[in-house]
Image 1 (spheres, one colour):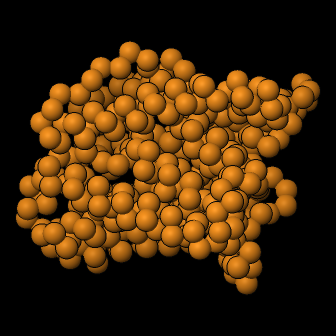
Image 2 (tube, one colour):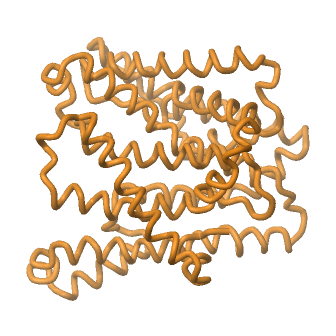
Length: 369
């Protein structure tokens, strides 16, 4: 969730705003419907229309993280890393500042969960165990944190590859040398798991792959590379209409596949899905192509974009409070998902707006640049 350093690029700001809305939607959807355990049972119980809405919102909500990663690629992979000063600046102003902000929010999130249930943590486990748990959380070991914070250790790791990838991509010969590794990553991290999942739907055994993508590099780098490619003009040969039609068709196909999956298993089209990669790439290209049409809304888009990372970090606190302290089980699905989407973001915005005027909060807590 990298922020722009100097001048703003409107289409990147707009994509970042949409991305944080989709991340929040993902958390709202997962608290409204069951996406992980008794999915076929829920499919039979709530009916096809509600399941179709659930599938569409689930697919849409899985486009947030890919867009954030593509923005990172569009911004950082176009930088020059030719001197020690270039590297020092990147690791000091990008990687280290992200780490500091992450540690602050791991600390806050840990105590938020401990203090909401002090009888369990402080009385049953004891103060010593609680303090050890805090240390381990801050060291990224056996963390007690909000599930949404999985993104932070992932992006910190991805950032370590940015200078190397940027150097490769700047030279055509090295860029071609990177292509086989990227294709192997796509096969092992996305195509092969998707193939086994669909074989399982029809009662057939999957295959074992011994080319582990973890031995190469993270599959999330595919999204970063896609963002760079689109920012460099990828997909420019498609007309405006063709690009929009392809984006809509890709989204509808993913929704149909997710709907079908709900009837048989708990399989989700997540970030390892080629369909999500394709849909997110087409959507990102649409933002690049049509971003200037949003110029009249530049000020609110820029303001929200600058606070996007802070909104991601903070909104889970009021979201958790809503889920823990209020019984929303009788609410209609549509009303519940809207409540869980809008209220946490609104509360977060009201907290961020005044505190961001304090330099320490703006720079280190909210990572606003």
